[in-house]
Amino acid sequence: MARIPYAQPDTQDRQAIAERIVQERGSLTHLYKMLLNSAPVADGWLTYLTAIRQKCKLHGAIREMVIMRVAFVNGASYEADQHAPLALREGLSHAQVDALHDWEPATCFTDEQRAVLAYCDTMTKKIQVPDTIYDAVAKFYDAEHMVELTATIAAYNMVSRFLEALQVHSHDHH
Figure 1 (cartoon, rainbow, N blue to C red):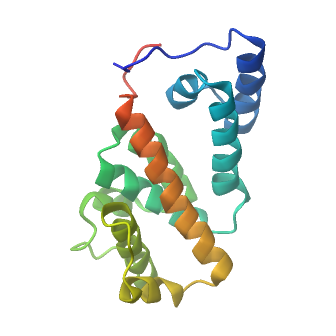
Figure 2: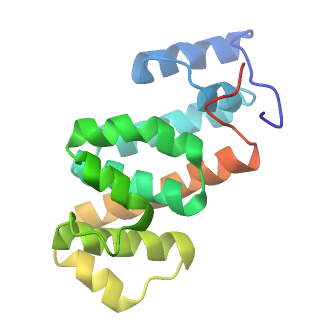
C-alpha cells in the first residue's frame, strides 16, 4: 500500500496534467496518480520522461533493457512490471527479459548489450563510472546516444527511487 494517497484529477491543475498524461501515455497509472499530488512535479516528470521514452534516438530495446535492469537492481517491482511488456514489444526476447535479474552468466546478450548492462549496473550501484566501463560502451555509441543512454539510466533510477520511497506497487488499489 502506498504511503500517501493516490491523487485524483479533481482540481483544474491536476485535470490538465491528467489529460496530457492520458494523451501521451494512454492511461493514468499508479505512478502518475501519485505524481498528481504535485501538479508541477507531475508536469515536469511527464515532459522529461516523454523525451527519454519517445523522442530520443536510442534503440527501444536498449532503452527498455536498461529500464528493466535498473528496476531489478533497485528492487522496484512496479517499474519492472510496467516495462516488461514494453521490452518484449521493443525486441528483447523472453530469455533476455528473464535473464536481466542476473545477466552476467547469461549467454543471450550481445557484446553491445553486455557493455550497456555493465554501464547501467555501475551507474546504478556505484554512481562513478570507471573509464574501462565507459569506453566499452562508447565504442558502440556516438555522443548523442551516450547522452541518451546515460540520461535514461539516470532517469529510471529516479523513477525507481520515487516508487520505492512512496511504496507504489502494481497491486495497490486506488
